[in-house]
Length: 311
Image (cartoon, rainbow, N blue to C red):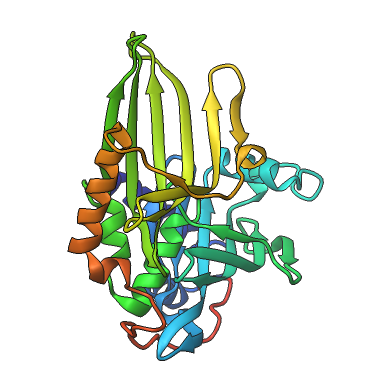
């Protein structure tokens, strides 16, 4: 399925590039400049490896990386994107939106992506909507629910080659921390996303998926939380998160968070998760410290200018 989707999106991209008066030689060059990342029924994602550039570093470790990305849209993807951006007045017909280019910056130490500029194009390569984002810009943290995750991992890998993409695709990306059966027969399952794990001072920072099912096996609550764990002290806090219930849908947990650390009770199911994470910290030091600026592990970035719309 992935292979067929990839071929379909590459074919669509080449067709778009060949539209109008684009010559065969230019189309060939464009295909080399844009590298396919991932596709689904709505979106095809590409990036330009030759244009990934380190903009800032500390002790030789990149802290700010710029890159150009390309998103190709099916009709459904264009429709969804126009609605999400609230630009129906500028693009009333989703068939007008063929692809977009974005200049982004990523921050490996905090797993964040920042959009600097976006240009939306018609099938004949005309700009139909454009925006340069003013500072301070909105910064998005990359986790499993982020649309931008595919872009983030390949951009960071282009500079560091530490396996972000491999970890994203790994079968053991998610590790089970603990499970518990409650008196009413419902079950709670906690899983941690290893792609998001990093050590910051005394804390292990990561995203946790906490799922509750009733005794019939129906999901009744999900909590998706960014946590900081002090493994030595056995304490943790929720930095931010969202909670889903059948009654209310997704809601921000912000109002209920106080920012304080709480002790993980001895003998609890959660203590099993603490034991598992302590073992992970001990066994995966390189991964958890991979972009620390006080422990250089980065490699030089590829320098390059901005790609053009047709390339």
